[in-house]
Amino acid sequence: MTALLADLFNHVYWSDIGWASVDTLLMLGGSLTLTLLLGLPLGVALFLTSPQQLLASPRLYAAMSFAVNILRSLPFVILLIAMIPVTVKLTGTSLGVAGSIPSLVVAGIPFYGRLVESALREVDRGLIEASLAMGANTRQIVFGALLPEAFPSILAAATVTAIALVSYTALAGVVGGGGLGDLAIRYGYQRFQLDVMFITIVLLLLIVQALQSTGQRLVLHFSR
Image (cartoon, rainbow, N blue to C red):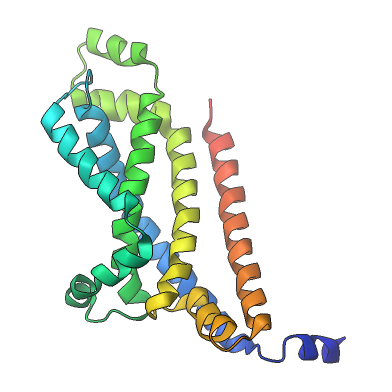
């Protein structure tokens, strides 16, 4: 059995696979944390400034919405390349885990922000009106009514964002971003080592499945 596995995966160096998996998880963890921290306020701001909401401001909403749409529509590979000068200034390098996180965050924030906005729109308008009738201010409505009520949907949005970031980490390998994507491109594609490609695909699928399963359990747990 061992000999058969060695023949099937003769190009695979498991230590390299292990380090690449760690790099992918580090990229995912760092970018997801920053994306959630910055994307949630963006989503709340988009919702509050949209028409017929508490802080309705057509011009501000149009400007934020335009910026979000531009970043969301820009292919991630192009964003990676375009952000190289900024990434170098921020991290000192455009390679590896550190060189990938800024681009991942810039791609993730508008994606998550728009999902948060959609989650808040699902909250019953009557809840906002009841809060206003009781004299609550905007801050109290956001933190005491909107976010708690939309929390399961926001968790689901975080799960979708995390899965999207996994695919982005793989694309980061195009410009030497490290991780499983880099391994798949350098060995699986450029050197035609299909066994390496197979292993990286399986590991990425396992990561995605783990994220999806965990997200679904959290959503079910917090749903009311």
